[in-house]
Amino acid sequence: MNVTVFAIIYVICAATALYIRVIFMTRIGDRKAYKSSLMDKLLVFLIVASMVAPLAYILTPHLNFANYAIPDPVAWLGALLIVASLLLLWRSHADLGVNFALTPGVHGEQSLVKNGVYRHVRHPMYTSLWLWAFSMPLLLHNLFAGAIFLVVFGSFYVARVPIEEAHMAEKFGEEYEEYMENTGRLLPRLK
Image (cartoon, rainbow, N blue to C red):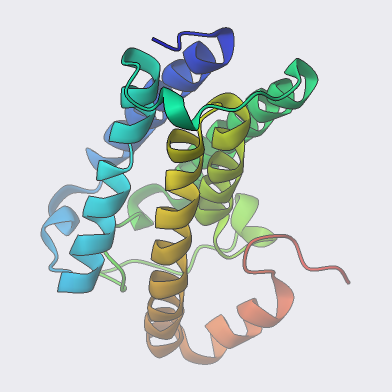
């Protein structure tokens, strides 16, 4: 077993992230029933499945052959990144409110949210997941457990964001194009 302070931080943060998602998913009502593409379903499944490797690393010795060591101050940077990820995940859900959806597209009466963290960044929820992905190799000192989410989420991000932005441009037209010009995709745009 690889139960370290950093693995414990990861598990606590993973439970907190799950709690955040469940809280906001319960608020979206019928929209969670919208259909998504087979590719989207596969990518979501892979993201959920990618949580198995960290648990296998922490709870069993089966992945120990891929362990590595990093200095504790670097690992603590991972703790800061994952906490920042959680804060941004919560804030982006809170700012979206009832506009949050699990599938790409604009469903029902959703509106274009441009306040809160969305005032500066179009996809802060994805920014939070990138922070999470970069924290994992620093917290989970194993090649598989640390890198799997980076690879899986990276694939998800590359496939899904263009689809989401196309849906938003179709629904909100010039308003969304102007919004794109004034905000960064993942980080605030330097002006």
